[in-house]
Amino acid sequence: MTLRKFAGLGALLSLVMPSLVMAADEVAAPVLNSGDTAWMLTSTALVLFMTIPGLALFYGGMVRSKNILSVMMQCFAITGLISILWVIYGYSIAFDTTGMEQGVVNFNSFFGGMGKAFLAGVTPSSLTGPAALFPEAVFITFQMTFAIITPALIVGAFAERMKFSAMLIFMGIWFTLVYAPIAHMVWSGNGGLMWDWGVLDFAGGTVVHINAGIAGLVCCLVLGKRKGFPTTPMAPHNLGYTLMGAAMLWVGWFGFNAGSAAAANGTAGMAMLVTQIATAAAALGWMFAEWVTHGKPSALGIASGVVAGLVAITPAAGTVGPMGALVIGLAAGVVCFFCATTLKRKLGYDDSLDAFGVHGIGGILGAILTGVFAAPALGGFGTVTDIGAQVWIQLKGVGFTVIYTAIVTYIILKVLDAVMGLRVTEEEEAVGIDLALHNERGYNL
Image 1 (cartoon, rainbow, N blue to C red):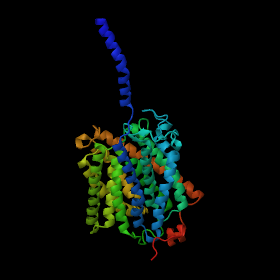
Image 2: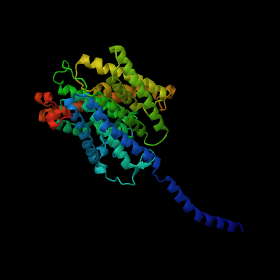
Image 3: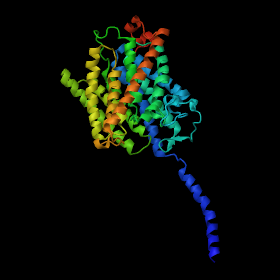
Image 4: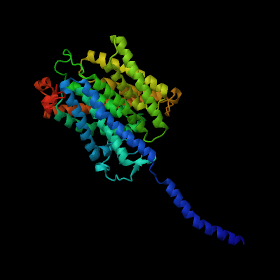
């Protein structure tokens, strides 16, 4: 009887075990999460909304009326150009992990492989994310919008004086040699140079803002000042556009920061909250600093403060708590105000729309303070136990990005200047780039 029982049990197990193995395989297989997918689709649209129309209006309102179309045209042209370059090779340079090995510094620590060129292997069923929960196609488009807005931010530094043809070529080369490699070093995972250092950059303080801000500073120094700067008045022609653009950036930034959680989860929710807190604090910080310094608060000031807060909280959005966000926002509003006004005036460089003063300075400040307020001891949600050590890591990331971006940007500009020239002529600048280069006027009054 005992032998019969064991024989029966064995027969039963032989029938059940294949089903159990199949069930385990099914559990292990990645399954698309519709909630995460919906959130990432929404975030992608929000980030694209930041460039067109958000940044186009924000910058367009700050230039003189004779140049509004040129700035908007540049934003739209960059959107088209970077979209295509991202598909051809940009995504692969940034996120292909071929040849990468944690702790080993090699070529692929700086530059991704070409395994994803022309989006090879991407299908409707290929998934990605923290647990492969949404389509890779969505991740590609989401990261494409980051690649679009970064060079578009640089436009603010050389507005009203760069040739459209030179701008297009510069942006294509800069994207290839600066943006995509920096994105790879910070975000590609184990084996990426700054990833292995432990640099914290949740949504692009280093990759987007320091990168664009430093490139913008180099651009305005190489191109030189606008004709008549700083003695000729060059007031913004339509601050209503600028305020609307700032509002669109504020709304779109929730996709930028909360979307970088790559899931509809608690991290995304906290990123949304700290983004709102820091932005509000920076807007008030800039406004009151200007009020005390100049006697009156301005619409341009509060709009600039909004963007400064958005920039500074970007690297920290996934790791800091509400009170850390409050400090980061206040610091960004006040520091960026003095850098965008006093520092620029004293040093005499013509950063037309404060691309460096807001994005460069705000990005650097936010990256450093991330190392402080990501610590659980200060209300953060990161894994930082030694604040001094993490701040040093953040400083290394900032320093590397500043030096690499500045050198490569300078070389690109000098080569292009020698080959085709960078600036419009004095006559074209006087007439306005809208009419001189595009044969159009922004206003028909």
